[in-house]
Image (cartoon, rainbow, N blue to C red; front, top):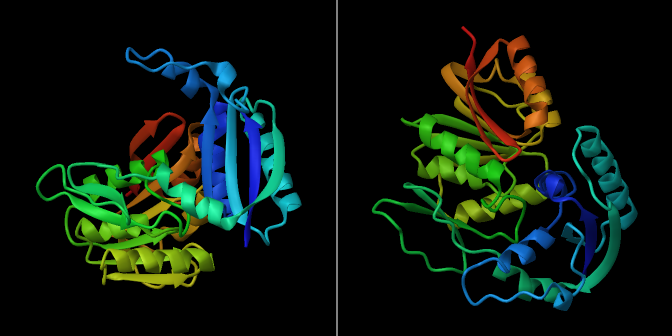
Length: 313
């Protein structure tokens, strides 16, 4: 069996936006990046590192993103979707670079034996660490809990800024046993984090069958027995109210979710949004206000914004 490989030559300004798009919208099995600046900066270190840019094969002008897909994926559809996304990002005033998109195939075994080297344990906070299932982990501090993940299963390994911002916000908000909903769960990492931080129960929703499988597998690795997984679009067909609702998805999808929030948010409940490019933050805030919600706290790292939200009243 082979894997479809898509290579995109673009600008570092759109790296994070394209990575999220490839994983969450196009279903990439994995994404890696090569930036010219990483090689240039390596030569500035005050150690024994020596970098000759002329010796580096296929060094990109700025950034090369490499995404892996199932061999049955139509490369023409992926290329067109990426071209459209680059045009959209350019419309926000972002540099999109060379915008060259190419496809090829590799044997699946090549990926399976190589990709693990890109994933290592992340000692994320005082309370949580994110650990790939093949690594042994020793807590940095007493009481630090490990979220065990199989990064090969689906989208969301914990390394992305948007995921980490939600986890930071959760540590602030989840201060008692709560009923939590993780909308667009992907790999299940946020649902697992909520469980380990003391949630009473967690509902994890997603529309993707692959995400359902991955989330269940990762929840099994973490022995989380208080998480329910449901295949559904956002919170449609979901009953009940939640003390905390999590959504780490792109802004356009958050806009679809916002009208569903008031009927699912328990009295005194909060919502955590992430995955928002700062250029789209005002649009999200306006939609929240129209739905009777307010932003209590905003966090930003690089281009990405996370919001803690409650009822306006």
